[in-house]
Length: 153
Image (tube, rainbow, N blue to C red; front, side, top):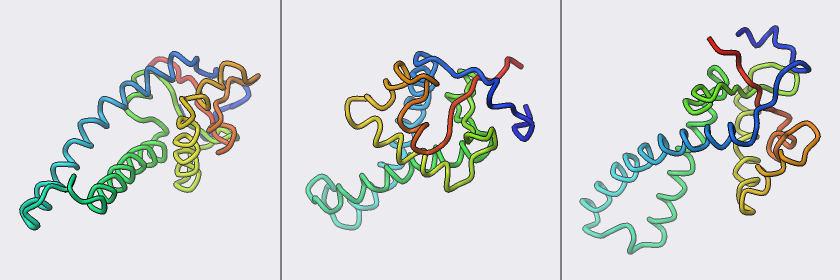
């Protein structure tokens, strides 16, 4: 699908179940990635300092920031390179801006930040798509992006 010719007004918006399916798939992949990153950070830390990073609030918070950056990079990369994470590809979803264009790095980062905020209050920002007239979640609205269904290939 060439997103340059994509008519956003005729696009089918995915259901909450499809969104959750993609989130689950991506979550599985991200758990593995975060385990690898944690090992790459904690093993050298332990060898250099002789301590466990759990013993240091600074080290633990630094690890948390690194993991958050890895998750952000994952989503921003995939959303700007084809508009789909691996989970979104499996569930036939694509992220586009409100004009039907591919996401820029700035727009993808904005979408990630708003998605993070929208999931914090017990996922209410995501559940909002059940009540929104256009089936958009909070982060879709705030970042001027949307998920659309992709035709089977």
